[in-house]
Image 1 (tube, rainbow, N blue to C red):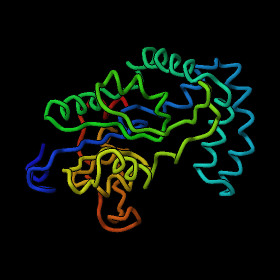
Image 2 (cartoon, helix red, strand yellow; image 1 turned 45 degrees about the vertical axis):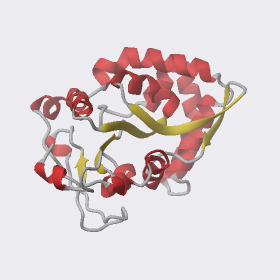
Image 3 (cartoon, one colour; image 1 turned 120 degrees about the vertical axis):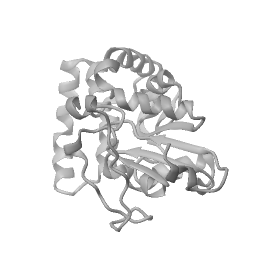
Length: 242
C-alpha cells in the first residue's frame, strides 16, 4: 500500500478495496461463457440466435446496454430453477478457474485481505453466477441480482444492472457513505468509471498487459474530465499472457 494511500481519505478510516470481476480479475467476460457451459453448445446457439436482432438494434443505438442485457437474461434464464443455475455456477467455477482468473489479480486480492482491508467484488454479472468465485476468493460479493419467484428465475433483473453509478449506489447501500473509507478500486471498462472516480486509490486495467492500459480521463462525477485513475504496473506474467 502506497504512502499516498495511507495519507488519503479520513484519518484512521478503514480501507475498502473493491474489485470489478469481468476483465479485471478475469481474462475475459464470464457470463456468456457460463451460459454456453450451462446449456451446452447446441442449446446455447439456438438461444443466442434469438438475440441477433436485439444486438443489431443495440449496435445501431436503438437499445441500451442494460436493455440488451435484460434480453439476454430473459432469453436464457426465464423459468429456470435458481438452484440449477447455482449448481452450474459451482461447476463452471471449478472448470474454468485456472484459465479464467488472472494470477496477479488473485495475488492482489489476497494482499488486500492480508492488509486488513474490507474486500468485495462489485460486478455487473449476476451474483448467482459469481457466488462460487467470491466464496473461493473468501470475499464479499455485490452483483446484479436476478428475480426469483417460487425457486425459479423470472428472467428479470431485480433492481438495476450493477454498473456505472449503480456500483457506487450498491456499495453505499451496504457500507454507507464511501467518503468514510479509504477507498481502493480496480476496474477496466466504462462501467467502472464512477467507482474509480469515487476512489482515492483507483487502478485502471492494473492486471492487463501494458499495451491495453489506455488512460481514460473522467471527473469526480464520472463524466469526461481531468481525474485519471492510476494505470499501475502489473507483473510480467499477465503482461505477456493476458
